[in-house]
Amino acid sequence: MEWDQILRFSTFKVKHVSMPKEDNGILRIQLVKRAESKFLCYRCASPLTRCHSFKRCQVEDLPVLEHKVLLNFRRAKGHCGQCGKIRLEAIEFLSSSNPKMTSRLAFLMYKFCEVAPVSRMAEILKRNQMSLWRNDLLMLETQYKHYKIPILRRISVDEVYAKAHHEEDENHLDRFFTIITDLKTHKVVGVEPSRRKEALDSFFKKIGPERCALIEAVATDEHDDYLRSVEEHCPNAIHILDRFHLMRHFEEALNETRKLLLKMLPQPAARKLAQGKFRYIFLKRDEKRTPEEKSHMEQVMKDNEAFTKLELIKERMITFFDAHDENEAVEIFNEIEAWAKESGFPPIKKFCAKLRKKWVYIANYFMCKISTGVSEGLNNSIKALKRRAYGFKNMNYFMLKIMQVCGLMSSRYLDLSGNWTPAGLELIGPQT
Image (tube, rainbow, N blue to C red):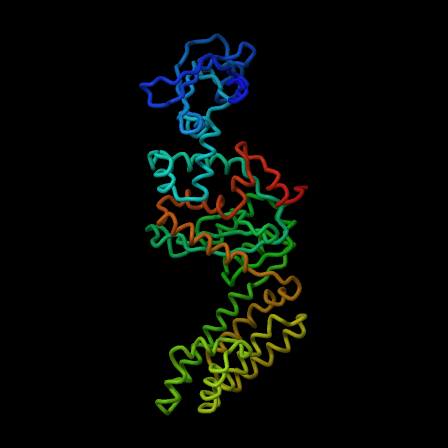
């Protein structure tokens, strides 16, 4: 097989191949330009006129077995009528992020850094760590320019903790990223800095009002900025408060009530039974408790009737999101609210008041049963990515890595030119 067939360059052909002994096994390939190839500007792709001069270039390509491959060629300069300047000619195989290597080598290193930290890949590939990081960042930025958000129908919005400190002109909301997840593909489709309303507004502006109108349902937590942004930009969407966040707040209210009841227990022995690991036993469903845990609960409830009432409220609240429709959910909620008022549990009453205030968003769950569960799972992947890299100083790089590792900017779904691969098209479906 000839070298031209192996390298597959459309505008250059192989003139000479050598491996000098003094180069320690480096394979050097001399290229010459084909006579029929076009002479175009590398900036605007306009034809260049009258060759001005030549620049000798040496570019690294993919290795052959254990041998490093260097391509040597002359790159012409010419006058560009569009730019009005002397410009270098366009070379189809050069990387746009690093002109010292071919695009396929840069893309391969980009794929390596997708599955392992840059520091580890620099050690394996025997390259400078900063050089490899710069290549990865530039490749990510190039891919993001080509990236197009697919058509969305159902999404979830959640935040992830990004940095420990904020700048002087920022507040605690700027320590987070807003993560937008497509509930069809279970992939991150957008990452915006901060947890402000402007962050989610920015995402909706990127996809435009026509695409926003196609969104059928949005699941978020109780953050008021998210509520206002969805109401403003997604007029046709059903907005649902996430069940997992609500149940977490209910468990916090339960624990606060348990602490209040603990102070009311007169006997030291009974108080000992109701603290420590009892917290985790109490939050469990009764059907999931072990025989020892059930016996423990019975002893505590025997010593204090208030724990029995709290147990009834907890078991009833667990069935709230299992209701078949809104009417059944209203009945369950009214029972819980009445029991909380009768028993005089301030944290539970406060929780019920919050639920009543935002009932319209909770009732939507029984029309379209979605949640931010997928986003919570992806948050674990983002935290693992952060730990793997021992943290990120560059927040833009961190956001792009989230899009790569947890989203559709993965090399499995986007090729070198930013086009959807067959796997990507199969995942996102028809985009019409």
